[in-house]
Amino acid sequence: MAVIPEAAQAKAQEAKQARDNQERTALGPGSITGNLTQDPILRYTQQGRAVCALRLAYTPRQQNAKTGDWEDGKAQFFDVTAWGRLGEHCAEHLSKGDRVIADGQWESRAWEDREGNTQETIGLVARDLGPSMLFQGARVLKGEKGGK
Image: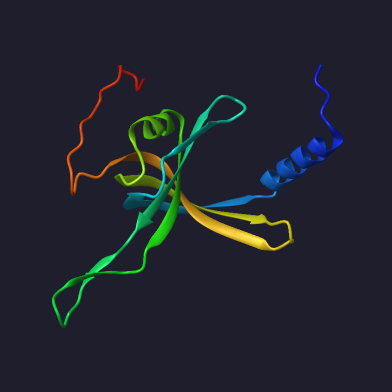
């Protein structure tokens, strides 16, 4: 039997409480196209379910009315979460710099930080995600029937 130090138990309880205090609000369906700012991060829940975290950068481009030149706007960054087999496929086949399209549900998440301030983030929980073929090609690797 493992003995867990009291400080570790307190820290684990604090983390659980923080997770329990998170408020999630569905904001509606949506999609985002952007470039991955880092390699996907794959983790597994205690129940063994895969969850993959991705961070996308989107830079709007607009044409300057006076010069006709295309100009980059301010970069925006979005967190995307992919669950289950989708998450595993993302981690296996995507990497930093890849241009991807993600479709899913926008979600707002609020929590209280250590100083007691309410923080909020908005991200996309992906239902489907894949490489964009606007600037490059992609090859589809087919799995077994039934999504495996």
